Length: 197
Image (cartoon, rainbow, N blue to C red; front, top):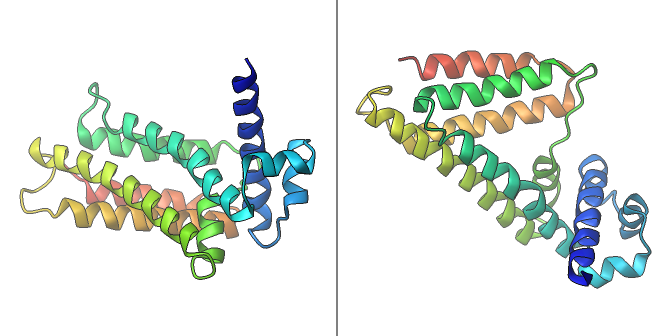
């Protein structure tokens, strides 16, 4: 029982602290802001994390491993063709953003990568590893689309996956600074053309 309480408290700190750090940035967030958001004493933070950098690294893992898992599951759905899996995933994201009364998107990975890549290389390396894993998931699905005849035989699936993944990161950046779904709409429209059967 004690270990599950420990895990729950660590997860609470990671979830609440990541929200604060996403909005305020790495430098704009102190340990005090993290523990206040989590509603815990400051000493508890250092029970789970060696430093703020250690917290940020663990928060990236905590935030993005479930997302990568959902992405992998969506792009491996045997009920749909590979092309339909990819387009369906991004169309659902467009619908999600379109339904928000006030579009407000803050990307944790974007916030950390812009701010910390040069100052704390470990954070930059972890961000890059997450982005590479995401592109690899997409590449596998594109290769299945190619095998199914949904993409030309000469298509470079690794390059196409990298292009789509990089374009999506650009969309997320636009959402962070803007308040319209137009970048997502444009992305989905172009993706449909890229993957035209």
